[in-house]
Amino acid sequence: MAPFRFHVFVCDQQKPEGVPCCAARGSGQVLEALRREVAERGLEGQVQVTACGSLGLCEHGPNLVVYPEGIWYSGVTPADVSEIVRSHFQEGTPVERLACADPAALRAEILDNREKMLAARRAREAAGVLPDELNERIRAFQESRAVLTALELDLFTAVGDGAGAVEVAAKLPADPRSTEMLLNALASLRLLVKREGVFHNSPGTARYFTAGSRDNARPALLHAAHLWHRWSTLTDCVRAGTAVARDEIAGGGQDWTEAFIAAMHRNASERAPLVVRAVGPENVRRMLDVGGGSGAYSIAFAQANSALRADILDLATVEPIARRHIEKAGVAARVKVRAGDLRSDRLGDGYDLVFVSAICHMLSPGENLDLLRRCREALQPGGRIVIQDFVLEADKTAPRFAALFALNMLVGTRGGSSYSESEYAAWLGEAGFREVRHTRLPGITGLMIGWWL
Image 1 (cartoon, rainbow, N blue to C red):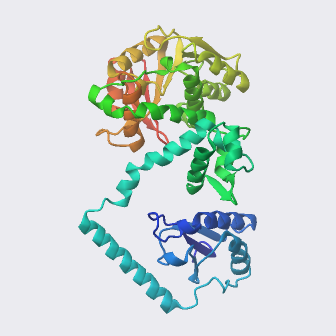
Image 2: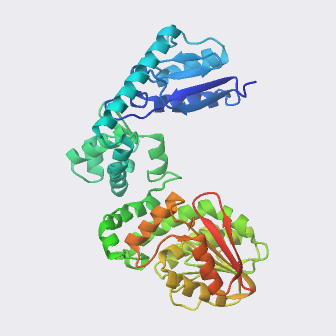
Image 3: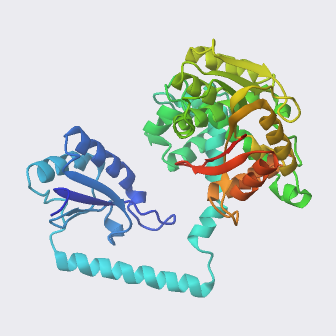
């Protein structure tokens, strides 16, 4: 028995420029409209919508097929979706004007297209043509740079509810010709929609990239724009073995600091509930948050335990940013911030929990061992240290994000990297911690936990 009354497969196959495909003909908009219409009509329990690869009718897309009947629709537009949902899914009558009526012709065309595709693939392989996936990976920086420039210029806010290139250029301000080129490129990436010379934000850019939106991520994403400049030095860094540009948060200037902490706060706010649940705040009376940044984790621990008091240690330039977040959260009476240098300062004493999040990857192995020794000195007997960071597998090739992040530390720090579970365990053991364990979390980071017994 099928779990859904209807199962709809919508082709959203991406193919190289100039090659017919459903994605180039607007399948993404059809998919979005279909999911929205199904939800609005209360049919989510009856209709399952799935994006899929090529259905073999590339010249007639966007294509979709509806099971269990096996009805094939071609040339579907977003304007057709409401009729399909109402007539086919609610009333049981397929939309004949869009349906493929000749199964034999349908099968013949699909098989013919498949043979053409295989023949083209064999010819490319014989000629030694660079595979599309490798070529796309090499050139991926172009799309990234276009979006980062738009964020730096606050272009999506300038587009607002709709604007022409000259109007957007005047708001930025920027050159009209080059602004139109950038706007057109962003429209090709589906980040903007262009209608009769007027550009409009997509639902995603309006929500995440515009000033005034509740979910505006631009302040945090500007950190990625700053990273662009460091990553451009990667070749020289590999030769030198360390960062060749100005490194560390202390040397980046206040704009860099604000963007960096905004990015860290956004990540930390999302992961804090997972961490608090995994660590358990119940028996923690005093907590030290080393390099606590915006204070997102200390805030989360304090909210989970009304008796907990937390101290955040971070640079003087970060201190006012943390205070803003703490006051907004309403825990200023129990979460305090003090300026200090985690690389050298004494960290205090009498803590039940020392929390070190997203710090160890900035430091060299020797600096991490020194930090963990000072963390142990700050704990009372029976206390715990909890390190949250990227934890590499033994061969250091996975997780992929952590392996790439090691390069981020190469271009941005004197001796930082991503480290493996065995490296963390060795440092913790040498620093005096016992019962060391690795706690895996959903997502890209994990916890290394040790006790001072």
